[in-house]
Image (tube, rainbow, N blue to C red; front, side, top):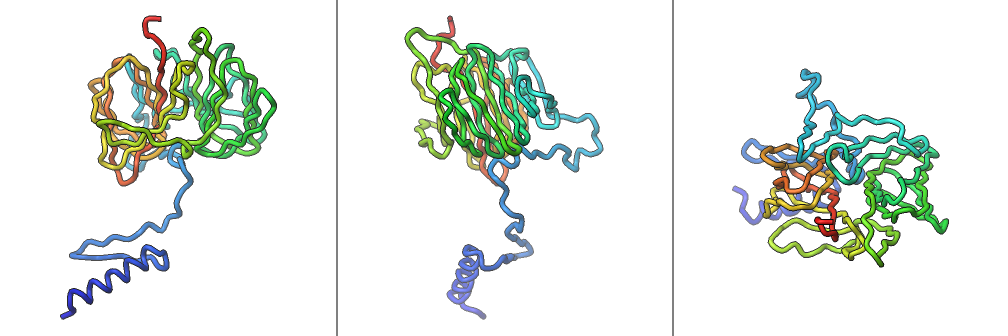
Length: 303
């Protein structure tokens, strides 16, 4: 009978081979086997831009959608997206996911840019935030400076700032716009960055990882949070507050509570949350959850 130490040595050797990538092997014990996936790793946010629109278990349910719209929240899922020419943009298809017609004071939409496409400008006094989900775009700002924006990069454009977003190949952006809430003697500035550049922030009483993409100073009337949850992690606080939210699930899957309803959600889903709707999230699955979250800040709700 083989000694335990000899078995341990062989196991460590096999583990080393597996981790260094020299060979792909399977382990079996008591009838259960596991093997590493042979699929190549997909690009960042691939699932958000390539969602499963027709799961095999739903193929016999024509007309099915997970999308829901209620007075205080909405879940908009990819099979419900309706794309059309985006006003003021050239060779770009857009799908509006959140608009004031549902009760929000901001818009969130997807912009699918094609070869040699170009953005338009938002309406007067409207600020804009863009986040790259797929491809590469070039931002040309008011001073004619050019900035390359890749996946996970973003830009904030102050109200009435001249700019354009140009794409030489296909690219997908998520865009948020709102009418700027002016404060006397305060003004915002153009910001360009990427998620990886932003530090992790303290989240007292919570386990998720938080990054904020915009300054927290008074001039800015909204912020964009990137929140990461490992499988099994969840919000400790069952939130009820005056802020509105717009959310795009970038990676992973889980359960979202909105009001008295509980929704399974996955990468590619969009959520609108009205003020004071009860909200809570738990991450499920085998990979982390990441979502992008709009939140209005720094303004008195009486005004």
